[in-house]
Image (cartoon, rainbow, N blue to C red; front, side, top):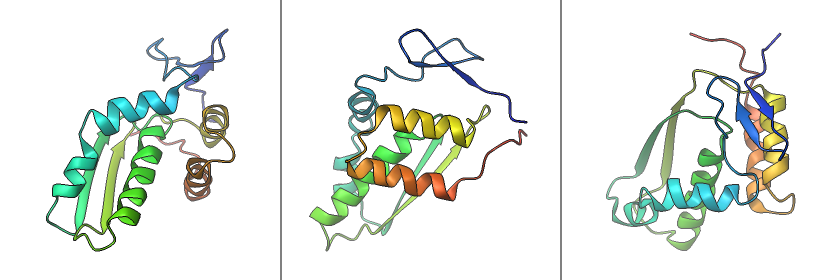
Length: 137
C-alpha cells in the first residue's frame, strides 16, 4: 500500500508529511502557480522567441502536477493564438522523490481547479494517463 505523502491541515490545505510545508494555498493556487512558474520563468515570451519546433521544460518536484497542467494549458493557448509559429511541441520532464498517489492527486485537483474550466479537463486527461506511483528509486 502507498504511504500518504500529504495531510490536509485545519484550513484544508495540502501539507507535505516529509517537509511540513504546504503545497500551495488552495485559495488562489492557480494564480500563485501561474505567477511563480509561468510568469516567473517568462514562458510566454520564451515561447514567442523560440526558434525550434520543440520547447523542453525540466522540473524537480512534480508535486500535484499543477505546474505541469498550467504549463500545458498555457502552451495550448499559445498554439491557438500562434498557429503558424515554428514552435509546435512541448516536452516536459519531471522527477518526484515523494510522489502523490493518484487518489491524492485527484483530491487536490478537485479542490483547486474549477470543474467547468478547461484546466479541469486537462487534469482529468492527466489522471487517466498516470499510474498510481508506488515505486521509489
